[in-house]
Image (cartoon, rainbow, N blue to C red; front, side, top):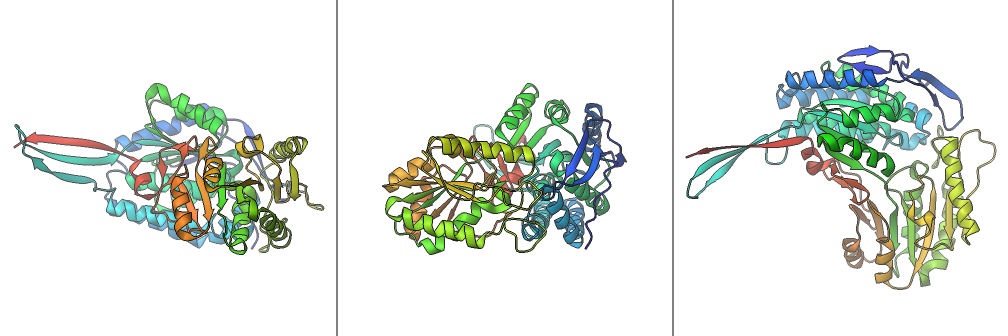
Length: 489
């Protein structure tokens, strides 16, 4: 199949109309080849304001929230069906724009969003936990009264999405917001804009009404406008902590609700006596997936001193023999490119400083030969301390550090020695591994490999990994406000 690029001449979608952007110019580049995919013009701040007001009008006029839950669910199911119908086109687009290996693009990048949109459709029909309307039993108080709780859509939602999983992050934010009855203004990362254009055109075809889903594109000034605009009721953002701080600051004067999914520096804890043959492969793939460009990547690997030598030998062999790096269009490729030349240079700087400080590169650390894109071989280092920057900062790259411990209590302390708390992985005897998992300061912990991703459970970060939740009943509830009606009996 020949790669089909969406029309990038009109990158702004406001009130049901596609428009040319009036903002800055951008170039979308294939990170696997460094070839230009498209040049386009983003929205300007005025257009972003127009999108917000269009969403406000549609919400206040009850264009979408006034429809029955079944009608909203029906539109979302049509959207999921269209995504499924265009699955291969979307997968190839993700590979071209983001560099994800095609196998990952066909699964987590495009098949999983279909599941998530269908889950959101089911939630639209069923309503939030407790229902759209919940009658409470009267209390025998001095003044008996009846009470009803109404759960209503929160209003206009600004959804700001990252490049690394461009379509799935839209599914996580936009689909539940629409299911709740909200109106949305969507702003993607400039490096995920082509994928987003394709999604919005499918949403339009599915029957999302004019003004209910609006798209603006561009840089920080557009995000600043969305985060601060008084007509926006909620901002949901996934990205770096620095930008998350800016979103929070911009939203503060109008007391908006915010949901932030931010960085991670997640640990893998290999308990004493764990089955290394079982643990090594999945532990390597967890930090290499999508070239390490995932906030949940488990990039600090804690191994008991007695197992360290054997673990490292098996890990180096696995990365050398079973993790092909290169052309992301090949089904056999496991690790594709980083998103940009600038990002790769930044990451290499961390490696250089670590080595200068005494770290040892066990495998990788170099650019593969003969490739034009922005590749970095999967890299494992040791000889670093738990407080070193390479063990504290999120790199967003296929790099992990091996840290040795002597006691389980020490392992837990090292694992929790991070300003982040998003994800973790524990290997060992099941009862002990579950006990250790319960001690980790993390929103999600996979024990002995965990299981498949579930749309019905929340993705939530502890500490500086975020505010609020996404997906699951708890994530769906973020898009509602609760109104209490009470009258005397």
